[in-house]
Image (cartoon, helix red, strand yellow):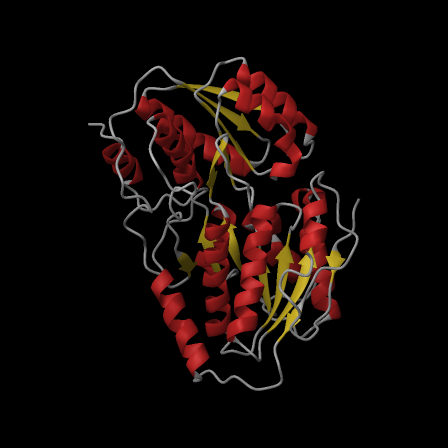
Length: 386
């Protein structure tokens, strides 16, 4: 079992001090050097200060439900039927949710869908999955989660075969004629980090101390954590951020909550917990209660699942953004379709719809954030389908 990397509060370091460590963590082993942490200066920030008022305005804006996708340009023509898309599917619940959207989109486009399994916890399996996918002579192949360094060795084979790869949820990625897309790429992670930072500043009146629960081995998640920390540092001099970096093995193995409890017991000034992935902290309110810490912190984060969002409704968790994974599944096909038609396109396929979900917001807890609810019709219109 790996141990979490904990850091204390120090004065305003550079946000990307742990970048070199993160780049080495491509085989999903825990980094042994401490991550970065941040604290504001000594100047006070009152709840009525311009910075807090600005954060309140930003947070309020993101509480409004989105009505449109981040796409506006239609295809040149309706998709030709009979093409094949291969989805490399991992064992995590997020991959299963993306697959729901991929199935919907492939059916709408009239494409065949093949699914090849691999394990995020065993990165070597993704190379076998990539090789198997080529046997289906696909028009494109999609995958989620693992950083490019894990599977970059397969790119020459795909270039030779003329098969494009549409990645997603992988963090920063080198795009080229073979790796053509990055769904929910860095712009999404940065934007979500900024949304939660503004909520934290506003909710704490510019005086909060957040435990930034990170999983930097997955660059997609690191982007959010970095952006949250950077935006708090930039906007709130009296706010503090302490980092808790968990390995993927611990994050998916139920080790996060005990590490959070331990940090809160060591540092009672922490009054917020901000998670990089909602499912990683499932059951945290109960764990806090068992440790005598019930009501001591507010819990927030990105990619809230049905448990997190149900807790938001009940008030035991405070704020989450939803994970638009079904919409992400459609975006994989959208990139593949645009590439097949020789179009110029945004490799991120537009920033995904986002909303800050709090107890005061009207929403229904679900495993996936399907807003706007008519997203299939919006995609069909973009694809020139009836």
